[in-house]
Length: 275
Image (cartoon, rainbow, N blue to C red):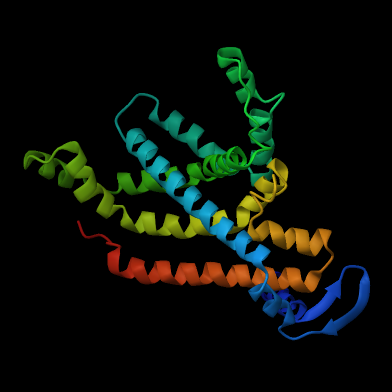
């Protein structure tokens, strides 16, 4: 399974990145690292990378902070907590493509439900998907909604693993709710936070492609044109497989470097079972 579905495609990608290759034409030409060197001077590609980093930062911060807040509330002894947990986890079962379709129905300028409500209440409509800043906001919010259930699931598991006697002892010592959370709960959740930072980073760089494809197609004026979307445009629409595979390898290498840095930092800051 690993050979045919991981290693063979990986080495084939490496091979294609050194070629001048197109779909439907058996003729190829070896260009060595030319596909990579052109990316060094491509200002458009640099902007796509910067946008990918900005989107990733926004998605990770919003998705994880919101998930931690919701998980903390769901961890309380409230009636119907299991029902709420199940409902909040469901969005993660929806693919990014379907998420994009849902948010297109919500944020469409003429027929979207959000603009219908705004028009009914305030007599205004927002071009969510056809102006720069609203389009970026919509993509980030759709991505957060798609991944937040995954984060909630792990944070709830982490909160339920924290011994209650530790929290009770802090309360007896006079620590208020915020102090108990910041000095006890949050540090003990560090293994889950570290894991979620890594998984959310991978999601933000790669899995948001389907969502952007359905919502904005990289527009308007390439304001949501991420590095992963550029791989699709170069390889599928531009029929340049060599450059597209080179771009995908560069993006993969960037995410690997980010993950390694996260592991290095995590080894110094994450606390495992230090109750």
